[in-house]
Image (cartoon, rainbow, N blue to C red; front, side):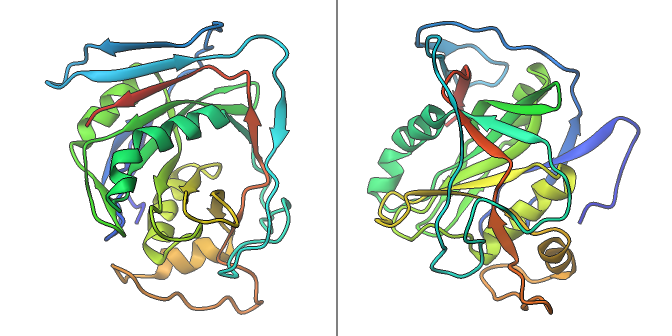
Length: 268
């Protein structure tokens, strides 16, 4: 639950697909503008942590475009059937590069081939009312075929703090399952969304022939209320909403931006 606050401080949560998330403090950043480049650079970055970090910086030339995410019906019946969400709150737009998602899937390939989940954390900067997801942090983690738990969260916080990033969401794989949000995924998403309403979850499901990825958020107030009251851990069912609306839905405020520069920090 989110029940502690200090002046200028909020919480960011580690991802745990078996239990609810564990908080550590995060200072909301000042606005930083990210410069552009026209090439891809992969290099080793020295961080304060003992292990090296692989950083990939990518941007594409002029002429790229911004596209709205379109969706199809979810076979699990929890998400909306169009790119219009059921939420009543007005959300700020979020831009993300599809190349970032593709690169994450490539970095997760060894785990995926062994039927192990991989998770990552999305960091964004805010400019003129729009969040730009420009950083993917892949933490040290413990994984199974149905779960992924981040460890050494202080390394993630150090990067977020150094780069003045908002915790705009998280991404993880379903190596052998379809594209949906499990009950434990919903608890993880609640932790992010309670902190930042625009926060969203990306599920990468390479073996799902109907939809290889999805971008989801809890419906608000419906889904958020259910998860706030739920005290269960592990995999479980959630009660249906009285009005029949979904607990989670596709994001209507997320756009792919092919001209967006990004970095990937692989801490494993």
